[in-house]
Amino acid sequence: MSAQGKPNPIVNALADAIGALRADHDMHELATALNELGPKAIEKLTPAQAREQPTMADAVERLLGKQGKPMDPRVLVPGITRESIRIPTHGGGIGAYVYTPDGVRNAPIVLFIHGGGWVIADAEAYDGGARGLAKEANAIVVSIDYRLAPEHKFPAAWDDCLDAYEWISANATSLGGDAHRLAIAGESAGGCMAVATAVAAHQKGFAKPRHIVAVYPVAQTGSLHTESYIENAIAKPLNRAMIEWFTGHLVNSDDELKDPRIHLVDANLSNLPPVTIINATIDPLRSDGGLLEDALKEAGVPVQREVYTGVTHEFFGAAAVLDKARKAQAFAGARLREAFGD
Image (tube, rainbow, N blue to C red; front, side, top):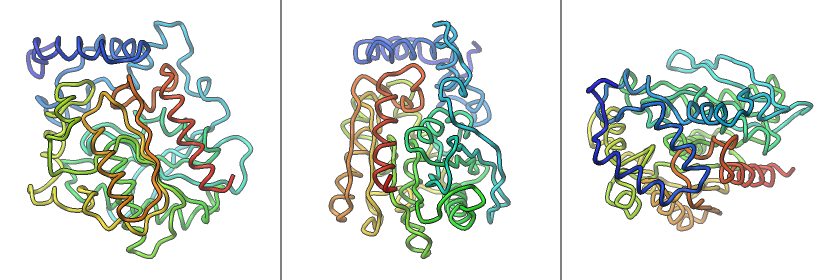
């Protein structure tokens, strides 16, 4: 590992020690696998360098290899077909993966929005979450590759998400889906944009989604001193310094961090469908989930939130190796099926 971006050895050792004490056994094994891939400190890198760092999906593959288990997603989650498509947008078009359960006809459709702090990652890195939701919800999942910052600053990603939602609504039949049974889901930054997209869809008069699944969403950018930010300031794989790095690359000015599309707790949430929030204990964003839950309740929106202990940020897509991820995906799938009337 080069000196550039190398984690502080003392902070790194402390983070590993604390993580080992707090994490479930299988989560600790996965965290160890990620450490073995030699990730650098994202907050010390350029965006281009950060995008080259190992992901949780890479760690899952490494751990499966160590365990002698199959790594092929088609074997891990059977009965799901994935194909690539292109979705036209006002920004020039974006790529997407469409996950379709075998044998479904006129199925519900879920727009899935990946995480990565608006700066890193892509739909491929979040294959585990999207594929798992398709299986558990028995729904078509369309996972999009929205434009990333800093090349495309706020609100480019939000615009892509809304354009994709409008396109899915208009083209549901060609996807094999039902335009009357739509939902939006996302992880982390994608969880934030899942809620924001539903708000924008109402404002534009688009079809109303039946449900929103927000997995460890960013819900506020007013404070980096919430209980979970303090408790998990040096946690892995997400820490407080990384959040500052992400938002610094995202916006044109700090004033934009007050925009209700990012600072969801100030958004008009009153016309949203029921919401499912999933959080992890070892995550700076845990308190954001609680604040979003409170804001939704105050707006009169039905909401159910589950906090999974002993797991970290990015756990949701790791169902191949994590028991809590399997449970969280099953919970999200059940909530979606209920919303779809299945």
